[in-house]
Amino acid sequence: MSFLDKQHTIAPPGYSRWLIPPAALAIHLCIGQAYATSVYKSALVAHFDTSLTAIGIIFSIAIVMLGVSAAVLGTWVEKVGPRKSMFTSACFWAAGFLVGALGIATSQLWLVYLGYGFIGGIGLGIGYISPVSTLIKWFPDRPGLATGMAIMGFGGGALVASPVSRQLLALYDPAYTPSDSTSVASGGAVASLFLTLGLVYFAVMMLGVFNVRTPAPGWKPPGWDPASVKTKALVTTANVSAANAIKTPQFWLLWVVLFCNVTAGIGILEQASPMIQDFFRTGETSLVVGTTAAGFVALLSLFNMAGRFVWSTTSDYTGRKPIYMIYLGVGMVLYTLLALAGASSTLLFVALAAVIISFYGGGFATVPAYLRDLFGTFQVGAIHGRLLTAWSAAGIAGPLIINGFLDAQGKPGELVASDYQPALLTMVGVLAVGFVANLLVRPVASRFHEAAAAAPAAQEVAK
Amino acid sequence: MSEQKATGSGSQTVRLVVSWLIVGVPLVYGLVMTITSVTPLFTG
Image 1 (tube, rainbow over the protein chains, first blue to last red):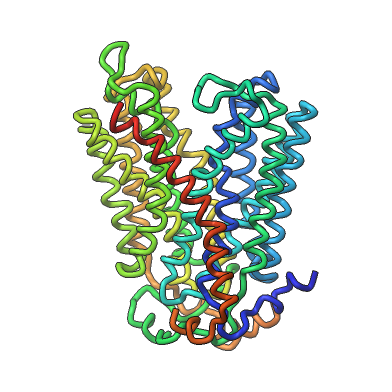
Image 2: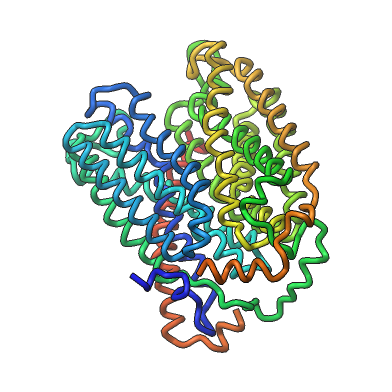
């Protein structure tokens, strides 16, 4: 298995750096399936004869494990390099599906928790961070574009997995009708789906494993002058280790920024379908019917994905701090408009929500480049892994805030626009906290920098 | 990409095309399916 070793992944002269984004996409498109679990949720509820909450725990375990494994294993990912970490991610992600399939086939829910949730969640965490550091090293001139492409793949993974899963379920259970939202597939069909996804995802992720390379030491894009980064105030040419990074205020300010941005986005994503129906409700009926609401949810998925690529790429020109001022500052304005004027027009409501969600996606995709600017490339993957704990925390806080406020008003799907105002205006406050945190970001103090020769030397040792 | 053009072989071009197709085709399929499901929002 020496093929997987870091020293065997150094690119030969002339290796195209444009092979690295598809390698990263091969990983992120597969693990992005995590956001397509709603396709078979009701089938699992019926199969296990349990509650939606008990099935929802599968996804919650996976997201918690994503944050934990990215934080704990980030340094290991940096040490062994992208190929071994991508391979490990593929093994965990595929094994998660296979163990999950066994759990469904034998009607043992705990095996699905263990498989998809725990084992698959580790694959999610390793897979999410494994290509990031490599992409940044190949694209020092366009780090936002590079990480935007990969992290766009995570958003796109659900867009691919949802329709494919519906078609596969129909293939495995002829009684299931994908176009009928009340149709529920059999447990056996979901087990077969898990088996299929596990095998196919493993094969696609191997494309990433075979294609990924790290640039040779000293490599730089032709025509690019490393000195050009020195002209930007927040962009460092020094390096900070992951252990030191978490001792800096900048890391924790960015943690707050990511936490606030994700929490606010979840505020809409969590209740998107009932929210649009409630906003345009008069009495018992809503102007927005179920299929239209489903179209709204799909539109948000598109803007979530597009925002990851477009905004992250834009940040290469604007700088990272200014673009987060837009995500958070303009986000505050849009959230306020949504709360106070969103009910005046469906077009206005949809437009506001779509831009807010594009900022949510952009926040995810731009943060690795922001970390590179502040901490250098030395252990940026490991630092990114530690920062993703903000995502896990927001995954708990976001739904708690929005559901807490809405529960006090009644039941989503039976509310009116004004019932959403306390929750939405609270999100404006959350974004304001993130805005201030971003404003406070300054260059990292030189005492945290690695000695000039130490970083490259440490990288050699790590090989 | 000029550096790759200068030194890249034909096999690398094939590899680039195949690699982008493997990830690009599913992504485009997912986009088309999602755009299709967005339609009722503007017609419904």
